[in-house]
Image (cartoon, rainbow, N blue to C red; front, top):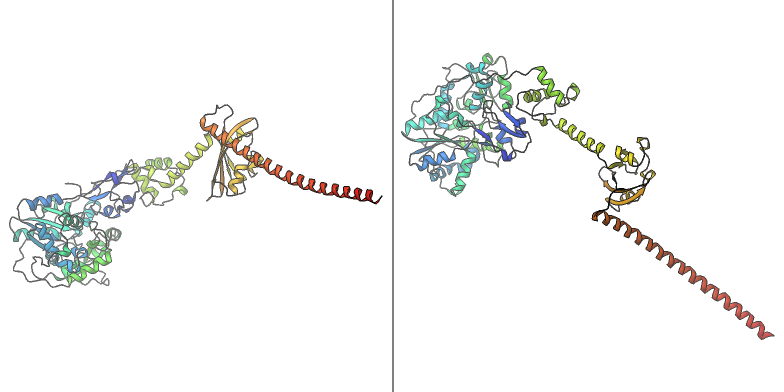
Length: 562
């Protein structure tokens, strides 16, 4: 049996979202890539719906459907009742024409099969009380709750029943089922269902196929499905409670013996109940939240509530009379214990995982769920079984990253110092302390206590975000590279001892630049000083000249008087 869902490894981005979403944790992560474990998978397609990178994909049988049509054989389309959720309103009457343009000879609604199996399942003649229209519920019970197989109503699904009906009415035809479910292909391949359905494609694939053939349902003429009798409420089958509604069973939630539920969490919760076998008369479970209208193989673009409304509106439309008769078919279903005993994981194995990820102390087990598992214990068990990797733990990886960063800073031969917003030292590494002959006892002092702080002062004043220079102190020549961490209001200095290094071209450029800068500063200072001195000297000379002229005038006046 081919895989129902597979992983496009090139698209897998190491996010663990599929692990988190998978209700039975049937995902194995190896080398950062998430792949589906077929022996654990119940084919619900939750990972397909949840994966943002489209790395999880429903296996496609579109080419097989095309081959059947191109072979010249009559091909009938069995269209799931949830189709109205995607092609509702006027499109519901035009989709049959679009399908006939693709080459389908007969176009029928699977709701025919839904009406048939509802009558059989709710007749009270069969043993069991859990409805079996949803193949994912069957897979889950067979694989994880085999002791509940005796509460399953042994009646087949609408798809299988309808396929058999079509083949009785159209001898020699092939049947292609079209729906939103990821589990239908594997259901059709079950040994007891052999021959009922020849091929399964999804709504998303149908939409792409129509685009390839340039067929727009909006531009198609209206036509009808080839149905048997009035379908009425059987068209409500894809929404929660639809089967009970079809069978005329009151299910408003006030009868403790009748229940309809949807969604993995609720279905699994109900099946965990110890009194399931005697409390309920009818249980209608659908694994997708809201029902089949929320199947994983719907095209994108609408929410589940809009889909629900479109299905309800379509169910109100009358069905045209048909001369086709409903044949008698085999409707019995068979269930098999498919459970596999999980590998036992000892406490010693779990503790080894805890030790590796730094979780020996129970207080360090955060149960954050970032790895995709609800608890650290579940993750440890998965790691021990080879389904998960220790690196999936985000707190563990964060600690590793921090330790590596600290180790690099502690062992680098370059001096590193971190300053606060007041240029006071808050951290320094061993190389910095050795270079400037200090220790942690000076933490809290301003950096000017040890080295030239001009570069830091410029950054503090907002004149620069980084600064480089070559300085000399304590008998060593060093290169400093300073930069600002504005968001953290901190400054970092990296110092390299270049006393014994021969300058290369790049270092000479730094020296030349710094020397030129200092020369320009000195020149500007000298020019300003000279200008100021000239101003003062000029003013002084003018005043002296005026005094001298006055003295001369006085002496000349005295001589004339004599």
